[in-house]
Image (cartoon, rainbow, N blue to C red; front, side, top):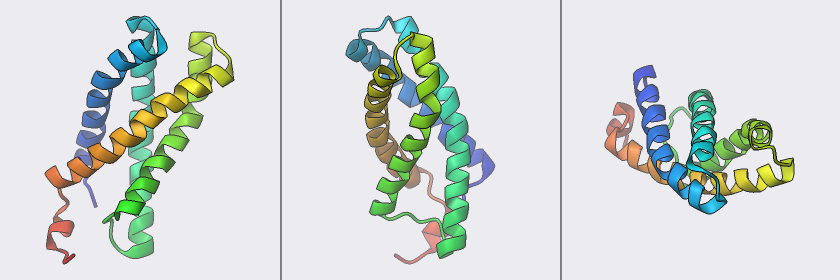
Length: 143
């Protein structure tokens, strides 16, 4: 299983790279001033960082109990990313609607667009992260 230090590195890298991508693209896509998209991006990143840590720790503990390891198949990676984003969607919907002064329906559309980006991004990022920073137990296991 990953160490606390590794989980912190994972979460910080994920959010910093994600912000570098989502703020400029979100500004263009939603027609918001960069300052508003920045507030949405940074606020979302803070919430997502906390959720990322809690979610991944819980997911890995559940996998360890259920199957005795934390190696994720391609299908499990897809489910992992989608479930993460669904939880984050529920967390972020009310604050986005409030901050922008828009309806929940409008905030939902915006949140879905952001979530779609992050589902693809999370999949690619986590696949790359696991290859760059493999867990020792994965290196010892036979495929």
